[in-house]
Length: 281
Image (cartoon, rainbow, N blue to C red; front, side):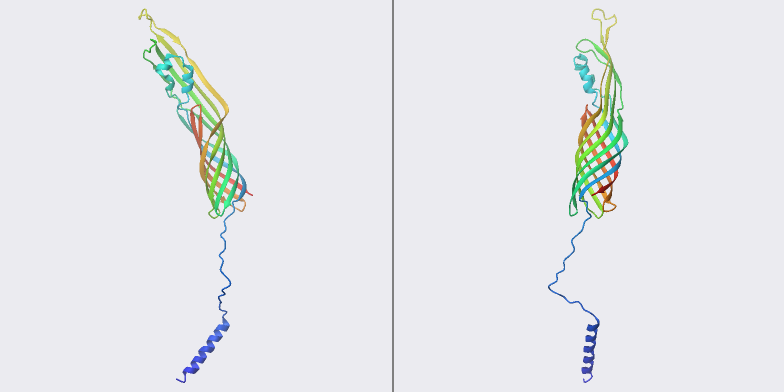
């Protein structure tokens, strides 16, 4: 057992030498570990930019001729009983087009959540022309003892030139990306034209002698209306994503849907796809 004591002494000396060679960490109860605060890319503040757009406009002229016809023939038995004004002469039109414009807005940032307000403008040229379906008929004998031989035609167009929207945005920061959704109010301008024509005859048999030719009264007419730069109003919604290229420059891609309130019974809406480049301050 005598050899055990020298061995233990050598182990103790080795431990002391190792402790001298390595600076072992020590725990200090007075110093607490504090994690770093999360950081988010800053979208806060004002921004401005330009954009290119491609879109589709739909204008439905199906019911647009009714008021013109019913007003022109409001006192006739022909309208009261045969109701030719309810005949659909025009249909819906879809047209594509390009646009150019810009935007300006302000973002308020709460950690990685974004709330903002933006005005967005697009100058475009959607030229919707209504497809027409002329129709001709001969009515039966009405209460006044006459028949009516008529042929109806119509034309309609809607040329949208300017679209502006004031919209709220809600977004979420994901790295250098900021996906967002939008909702707001829209206003626009369009050149509108609408006309309807009736080649109309009132045919009345001779009450005294049916063998004689009937009495024929022609009351053909054309009724129309047009307006340049008519104002449109509606609502809008959409979604998109902004991508930070640098601390102050960002790119954008988005989709937006705009529904207009009917004008002259013409229902219409617009869909846009846009790409843009902006700067924030």
